[in-house]
Length: 152
Image (cartoon, rainbow, N blue to C red; front, side, top):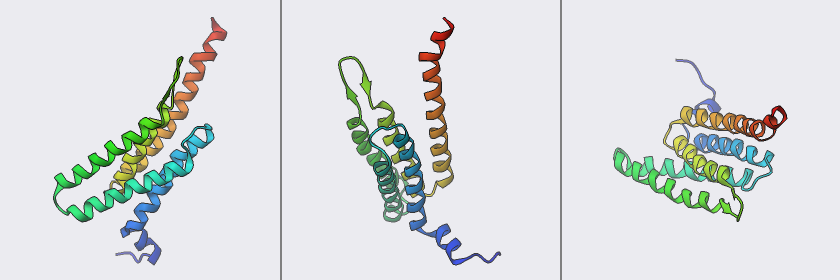
């Protein structure tokens, strides 16, 4: 067995390490919104992801081996955060705004929950995939809207 540093052991086994990771992943999603000059952004996404992580940790600790209780908690968090996401969506006469922010709010809660229940690799992969897809889709959207008009 390898000797690990105290910090390495702390980060590997600690709930605090999960909260730090969730905060970092939430901040990554928030930065994307910040760079896009959209609200909600950095603070909201960071706190949302940390809070969701906390609920995941609590669900595991309090429910123990009762998988149905853990699943119920996760479902209630997802439903509750869905209301937050819906609040980010605005409809005017000509268009709907905030759909991406609303979807990211909901996904951010899922990422936090995944970290909280110990599925950290999944949470990291989903976060990175979402950020890459958002930027790719933004480029594709711009090209379809403005780029193709040059070739018509």
